[in-house]
Length: 422
Image 1 (cartoon, rainbow, N blue to C red):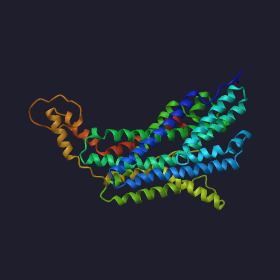
Image 2: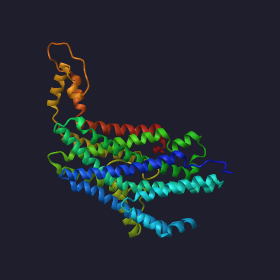
Image 3: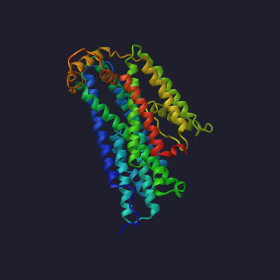
Image 4: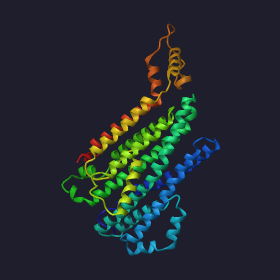
């Protein structure tokens, strides 16, 4: 007979975990195919593409083994877990997939989730069930943090390079239809990156909710879920938030690399990275300097999070976040407006072409949309085609993404998850 409460690792959680694993494998294939194409076309930045693939996965492999080692020697392991860690096959499996280190982590998360379900169905106590579920959450959070190497040191730079190629091809006059495959691959990678960020936030919020039940004792079930966990609308809001934010920053850096003075990308990224490092290193959690080992670890962590926040912001400490959010978007605004001001994209010829086509009733050749012909007479330029063509200007797309990211974040934190202000 089972327990009088249900398991928390649901069938949907299992399905979503498998979905994330498949997406990871598909993305690796897409990335290898992209690098193969770059080398086949002998592009000038082919070495950078390869470096963005090799270095993050090597760093993630090292970090994953380091965490396994710390868990083995310093973790509070059960007898069964210790026996499993002492098996040679366990470490051989991890070494075989050293370069693709998330794969063993996916296996760990699935194993711990199924174990929690098995213990609940086996009539364990509530305390034992919660302990098993916390182990699953810790493993899932570790997987997400490990994937930050992949997401922000591989995917984000590759997205920037792909957007650079896309904008450059568009500026050279390539039809949008011919770029549709590249555009879809960019959207897919943005979705994958946003999904990882959403998963990290949902897992950490759920863990915090379970670790601090006293904060939710006097709340209704709806209020408790709203302030301690993230429901479906909240997850969709998070996805939209990170999607627009990361797209904005990748496009921003891509446009900078297309300027006549390409060197501007180095001080722009360097100054922002340094600012992010200082914000994280001297955050309110900082009290005093510790041991040399602890300070080295904290410094490296600040460097990593400084690189992550080049592209998006997420909560790393408990408590009020309004000041950090406003500061993040203010720094983003400086970068975006600098890029917007310096970027020049000549749309005059396209405006004339589109205006004439609109007036003569032949919009299909320009936009692909059939428009009824106008009455013959004097040729006048309509404001509609001009507005349409400026929406296809990359720097206006950048500005729109920046505004959209701020609005989405405000909607999420004010409506969907308001405890950020507490």
